[in-house]
Image (cartoon, rainbow, N blue to C red):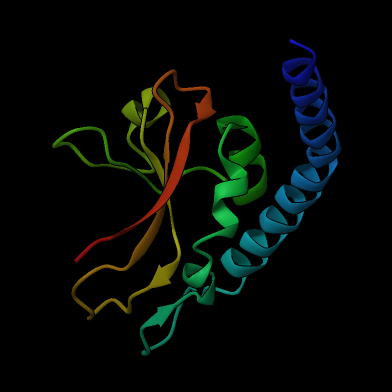
Length: 137
């Protein structure tokens, strides 16, 4: 029993000490994503894909973040990928979205295709349980 108590206490100490590290990591990741969104061109003749799409492990620190904090950092979601339906930003249904997505690419008007989108799986519409990259075509 004493051994289990020691292991339990050690676990609490490790978890307790890691919380500030995770929060700092989350802040740095959000800042980087925000910088990448601002760097996406809004005009031009060249396709663009953000270098932030290479952030595979860093986005794990964002699990559990609120949708409101994501919107405050990245702006309103560009798309809603609920089920077979996809809603653009201006559609009123996007406010009820469980899979809001932020685009990290630019296509010129004559371009066809898609690119990487950061999708938040928010089953309760309030908290991103998981964030993942979805490549659209």
